[in-house]
Length: 254
Ligand SMILES: Nc1ncnc2c1ncn2[C@@H]1O[C@H](COP(=O)(O)OP(=O)(O)O)[C@@H](O)[C@H]1O
Ligand SMILES: [Mg+2]
Image 1 (cartoon, helix red, strand yellow):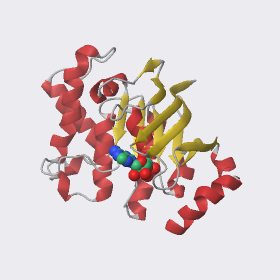
Image 2 (cartoon, rainbow, N blue to C red):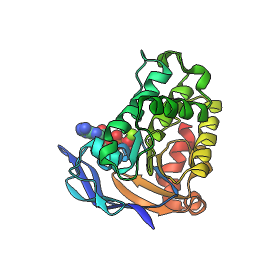
Image 3 (cartoon, rainbow, N blue to C red):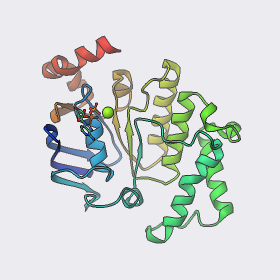
Image 4 (cartoon, rainbow, N blue to C red):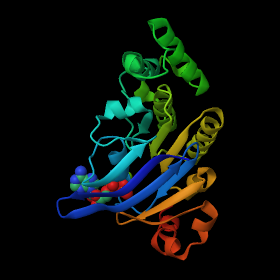
């Protein structure tokens, strides 16, 4: 069963058709990767899924409900969380203070959210934040300013901040961009662990083919704003159009 259905989505910026005829179906509890060259429209597509952009045409349904026209925080409360391409943590705040932000947002949104009743009081909120940091092996860093951490740890914190909201769909925009190989491998392990331990669907935009082939069950290749092909990793690897349009370039760039 699919949890996310994108149908015929198009988006134009002035004279540029950034997305056209985008159809995408993401199966519940799967990891679905979206790959494609720079400028293919990957981030634009993600922006359309989280209410940051409204497509000119088409529909985006999450769990049978349209996300279009909803504000980002409403989409968040529907169960979609997103890690941005540029880290969105507060560098001057400590790791723990950052972690409390989504817990607070979740508490204040609790009255509108079905089935969420666990994190209600301040003590519960702190417990939840500490539990998340422990899960991420970051509890020892809780008093550090977030800005002083490595890129890998910042990403980890961001992912933890998303997970604190118990999303059903986690969207990641190039989570390993600019990371050292060791941090990238830690991120792969972390995402595998999240996948194993939670009822969660992950849609990931990723440039690093090692990450894609380590995690994805299904891959959509976007080229010039349109899906070129969607298939399993094994078939994507051997697909002539994909090799020509993307993998060749990625190998050079990697
Ligand atoms: N807000 C915007 N205004 C104008 N052009 C944009 C905007 N956002 C993205 N674009 C353009 O749309 C195309 C797709 O961009 P993007 O979705 O960021 O690609 P990707 O994430 O695949 O690298 C690019 O040509 C980019 O310059
Ligand atoms: Mg992008």
